[in-house]
Each structure stands twice: as structure tokens, then as C-alpha cells.
Image (cartoon, rainbow, N blue to C red):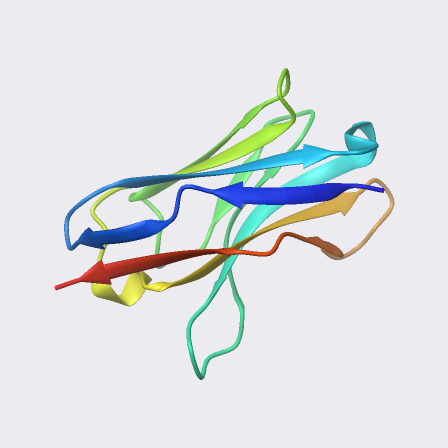
Length: 119
């Protein structure tokens, strides 16, 4: 069973950078795609970015395009989210997610890591 553990969240000021990491364990070879989602109080969870594990193709939400970069390290079964030029509206709990080969939606989730951006 695949498990995901996130790290790297924290409290920063607007304009600063943070790098989130997510390490997968347990049958990680079955993963097709990994992504980052976020949720702030009173709002629904929203897509941030994802990456195809073998091909490396990426996609981003419009709100983070040009500021965030998702990458993967296949040697460590890890995915990273480099977040630059952070804004107060980026404040949320960030979740790592995985989709196995053959799955149509993300169904494996980490516990989340909090990112707070002060103005």
C-alpha cells in the first residue's frame, strides 16, 4: 500500500519561497501520477500541480503558474513543489496525492503540511 508523507511547510512572508516535499513508500512502482492540492478554511480542496511519474509531464493551476514548479526524484520516490513569490492567498494546507496506473482520480493522500504566508 502506498503511503505519502509531506514536509516543508511553514510560516513565511509574502514574496518568500518554500519547498514542499512528499516521499512515497510501499509499492511506489505502481504510481502513475503525483500531485499537490491545497485547502484553506471554508474552501474546497483545489488542484495546484501534478506530474506524470514516468514521463515527467506537468500541469499547473492558473493561480500558481509561473510561480510554482513541481518536480520528481525517481531515485527517492519523492515529489517536490518549489513555491516562489508566495502570496497571502497561497495560505492553505497542502496535500500530496498519488494516482495509481489505471486510476482515473487521485485516491492516495498524505496528511498535509501547513503553509502560511503573511502580508
